Image (cartoon, rainbow, N blue to C red; front, side):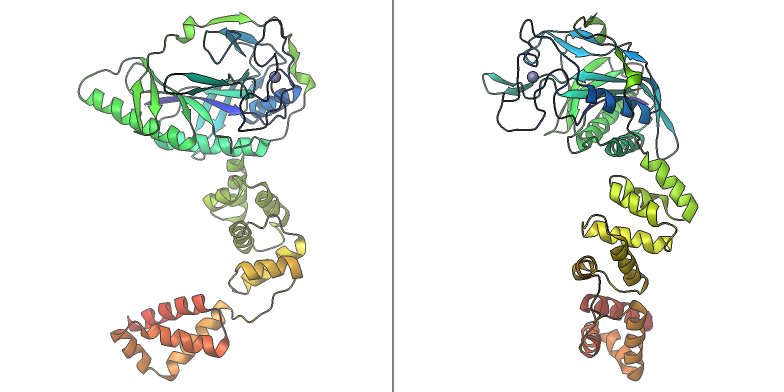
Length: 430
Ligand SMILES: [Zn+2]
């Protein structure tokens, strides 16, 4: 099986690719517009340089060869979302060529090309009419084209995960969902599924298409070369009659934009969180997956780990990171982090109050019993009256009595007492 992707990512620039219009999202249609992004005759584009910096950073993170000089082309086609009848994009002189992305399994997926292009306008279809919103026209996009190296659904998932994580560290907003064209071939011919939005839909579309082609082949039918579209409601793909194939598009050089010297622009350093997780896991003999889960989309977590990895026991540090994430409290200052780690190392349960008092008051009021102390007390209570074990055998609800007594005596944390009391009683009746 061969799967290839063309992923479109919106770049986080403040203004559009070829004009000064805002890229801010707004409900009101056609407010962020001007003659350039509406394609009025005689209007001339001028390139937003911050789009080059971000695109170059993406190409760099994907280990592409970066062109010294880039230029643009017009992809000519007629469609209502494109009043000037062409989209400005890149072809041979794309910003990045021949890169690769390494999946968490270690396998590399080759990247054919990273190119800069403008988004067309948005068509809103009604019953008997269509509306066009030009707010989206001219939003800078990067298109990432892979070779068909993705072998199955799991690799597709992994590819998207790693790509999104890398983009996150370049500052590309992952909340703006990715859009992609997917090509899948189980047989000899390539089937393309156009314009799938969002990771979930992408996986589902691939899933459906893999099954569909697999069944055809099982029946002795070769899947034909075609373009299909994905229907989110039925979660199926259907043949769509697209007139243009790649060969039929007219491409001409864009005379309104010159060549750009890419060497002049800086690269934002990017981090591959998969690589980072591997390094940290190796150094601290800790689960790579747990580290990756913590840092994939969390720069603050990564910084906290890197700054403190040699100061604390790594396992406790990771537990602290997970608590910080659970309560969404952002990055802790050194003192708060140290206190939180002390609490965890002492076996205390962390809840919202503890986190709060650590951050706000730099102290924790202890009306608390550590896990090991709690166990000792529960066992001691049972030891004093061994009949409890027999009674528990007959009636499991007795655990409430045991837990209740402990809570009363020591004012310890109820949830945890109940949980431990049950565990200890269960182990004793065996
Ligand atoms: Zn504009």
